[in-house]
Length: 450
Ligand code: HEM
Image 1: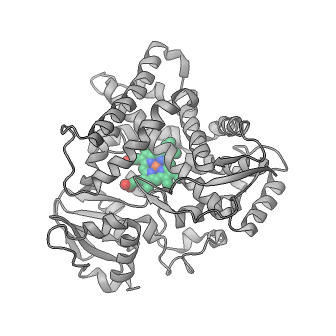
Image 2 (image 1 turned 90 degrees about the vertical axis):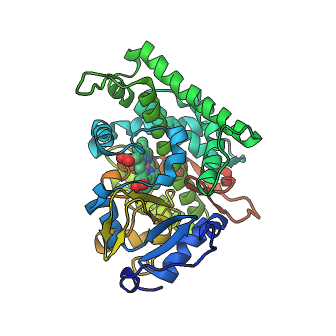
């Protein structure tokens, strides 16, 4: 691998075709493309998608400039416009003052102290789902975990029973997720008003998703007493300087983001963690040892989940190798100097946690699953922004503490009750890079009592 410094001064990259540049290579194998660039070009690579020139940043010091110290010169990647079709203009997609205001409003709900009160609800939801499992059954673990993480968001943030809304939201989202990532990777996608079968299906799914989320807003407006103090009630009662509340559309956009950003990522990270645990008995052995020692057969609580350090390291390591958010990016709103090159106004920079987490300089033996590497404060020993499963800076993940507690609880609650194994002759678990990185077709497991 080239050193970051060598390439920092004159970003270079693969030639690609005269028309589409490097887009075809990216479309064919996004993860391989992003990883190879780091190996071949070091700290930063220059690529082109059609007419769009872009930089892909791998050097943590440069990324820090984009996400933190010079972040005021960047907005979310223009290519993410497609996602606005379904997530609208909420916390993850809005910019400037609008973003600052909504982030300030929501932040108190995601602090380490505040999320503690969700622990019990999280445990109950996971246990309720596990009551449906029978020893001897084959189950799609990824699907079951998605049900859990969806129900957790619905209950903790919006005081809703996830089962009632899971179909209305998760089902249309499946198709939207696929179509949206496909369209984001095309130079020219068919305008939605053209009535192709694909477009019709996409539009129907978008409408179904809208219907599901608007029905939640309507229902709560009719019965505001149903979720006192939850995030939805805060959004419903918020007023701007002119004393105006949020429109139904704004409420819909914020809810949609929380449902989508909040359930799929955690579900994927947990699925990946299980995929490694099931293949490495020594990891499961250490987990059992920790759970027996710290929990002694009881539930995880807000008071003890931080003591489950090996469990946390397993999750950190799973997110290192299989970062659910495998790439993201920003577009420059002015000419801006990064390191010693200039990103021109309108140009974009991409970054890939998936590829950066394979840098052997910070993660020796990068392709092996070694939770122990996180012991002794690894994150303090490597540069800031070298390990970024939750991004960083003012647009970093608002739900990172929530997600860590939820994942520890889910992993322990499943593992304390059931012993899972991959069926004999299980095919390799492939990666599928859609809006997030997930196991293709999920993970099938055979369930047994521990
Ligand atoms: C393992 C689980 C999760 C992972 C890996 C993850 C990852 C990320 C990343 C990388 C970003 C920043 C993207 C960028 O800079 O372009 C982000 C933003 C965000 N995440 Fe998460 N996330 C997770 C869980 C959650 C949860 C549980 C919630 C909510 C309950 C959530 C809500 C959000 C929101 C609202 C944003 C946008 C923040 C903003 O723009 O101000 N995420 N997430």
